[in-house]
Length: 147
Image 1 (cartoon, rainbow, N blue to C red):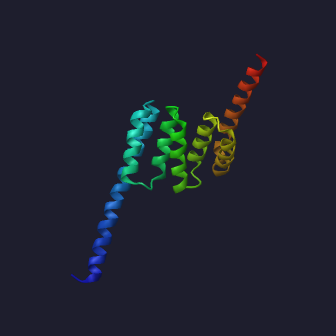
Image 2: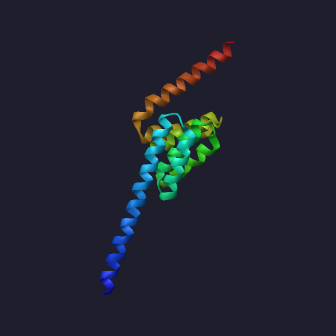
């Protein structure tokens, strides 16, 4: 076999293997998102971990982990997962918004504010959701002061 043919064969083999891994990662990610929708965050974590094991550079896998950790009130782990997603995809609007909410619920308000702004800049369609949440929180806070 000629050296050039061997390189072509190896390239095709590597591309085929990585494509399968990426598809498997996406399948586990979709399963995890369905489990989150079914309010099964612990099972979703397993699916997201499998997605990441198949493709450690899959930002959405880390984003999914962040969502699952947030839904189980494990905010430091959620922040870590969202940060991993952002290391791979710096303008991942979902990860920015998720990390902003996780910082907020962890009472890390200064860090939360920066992520809320970045999330809105990354995806302006999230602005209404974020602003409505913040106004509701302010109203709750003001009500608690009146008591």
